[in-house]
Image 1 (cartoon, rainbow, N blue to C red):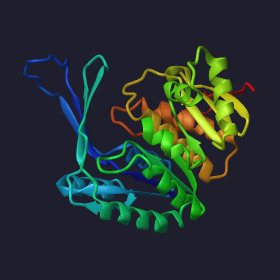
Image 2 (spheres, rainbow, N blue to C red):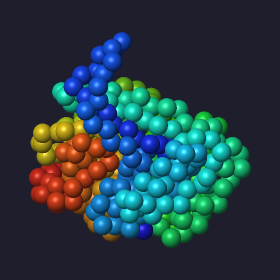
Image 3 (tube, rainbow, N blue to C red):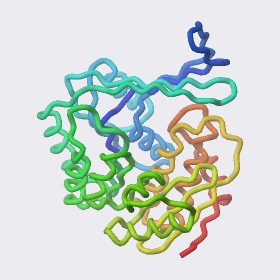
Image 4 (cartoon, rainbow, N blue to C red):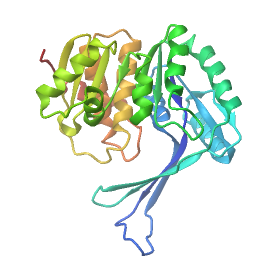
Length: 309
């Protein structure tokens, strides 16, 4: 089983409209509202590929109830820590040209006893999991070191740990040596203490981070694919070229594919192939954190994985 952890879960609302004009009334053509947050997106893509998954995190108020009901309707198992605060709403406004404007609420403030409940629940769930994937931002009230603490709990239970976050939460979380992380180029540069001028410099930087005890590090290069360092080897992955509908959630779909491959014990090349096919398939849907399994299977053969060092 794969467990996904979304500490700042949300209702993801997507508005589709002809154009967004400041200071004017805009008529929305269609609306999607569903459980969201990066870890929930990961869970949905895992489930759509027929792999057992359970979503956890913090959920509160009527928005939290909506999140849990939505996951149940989608057939995704869940076990959240109930909190006093109200879970957030995140808006994605898509115009007819495919331009996305996101408005993200900060979310609730988490109390000390709620964090303790999360520690206890994670220990129970991680003992049943092959992979535990932590995704997204930390809610207010939670220390930047909290991911590192939770990673240690999951590792103690024998789970392989993924971490997909940003900023100080990523830097601090990486101190616990998760198996997989997905930083951007700026964060890699911050770690290394110098700017990254080209792909070769990025490759050398990722290999240096491997040596610090981070086994698998992927950096997205958008439509160009990704660069991954894995136990001292580096892989360039080329994504298939498609007519993208909506790229929001593609990074989460990538993490989901990587988690599925890892849980199934696939070689790293096949994990990267599945991750890239999943991320690309997400761009073909109007909603974030969705794939059609047939798209993933079709795209697998179009992903190019090349070892470059």
